[in-house]
Image (cartoon, rainbow, N blue to C red):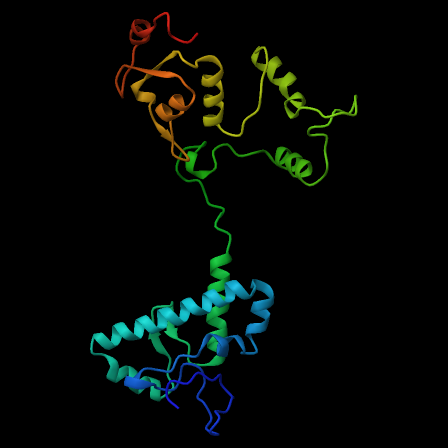
Length: 266
C-alpha cells in the first residue's frame, strides 16, 4: 500500500485502512504525501474552496506538496533520512520547507492551506508610522489628505456624479470644466487640465510648448522618479531636445543664461 494517496478514514480496495495524510512512511523512509484530490476531499477544505475559489486553493495545495517533497529530497541527500523515517513511523510532524513542520493530520493540512491562503491574500498596503523626520515622504504616501477631503473623495467615488455631464445643457460635458476655473484663478494661467502624476504633467507641458525645441535642465535634476520615469526619457517622448547645464551638485544662473538660444522653448 506504500505510495497510495487515500485521505484519512478511507479504506483501500484491499480493506487496509490508510494512515492519516502525511503520517505513514513510504519508500526510503519518506512519509506518503496525500494527493491533491485527497486533500480537497477533507471536510475542512470545503469552506476554503467556497471562500477562496477552487483555482487558488488547488494552487496552494500543489505548492505545499511540492515544497514538502523537495524538502524531503534535500534532507535525504544530506544523509538524515534515518531520523526522519523514525519520526514518520511514530506519527510525529516532519520538518518541511513550507513554513514549519510537515502536517501530520488532516486538520493540520487544512490549517496549513488556510494559513497560506490568508497570507497570500492579505492586503499588501499597510499602515506605518512615519518616524523618518521627513513630513512629505515619497515612499510613505507623500502628502496625506485631511479627513474632510478623504470623505469628499469617498462620496464622489461611491455615488453617480456629473463628471462628464453638463447639467445646464443636458449634454456631454468635460471633466476639466469642474475645476479648471478654480485652477485658473489660483495660478493666473489661461487654461488648466488635470493629470494624476507629475510625470504626466511634464510630458503634456513639453509636448504642447516645447516640441521640436530645446529645454535647458540642470544636471542635478536629471533624476529617475517613482515608476521608473526618467526626465531625459520623458523629454525624448515629448519631442523636446535636452540641453544639460551645470553639475550634479551645483548649477548657477549663468549656466542657464549661457545655454539659451533662439531654439530654446519659451
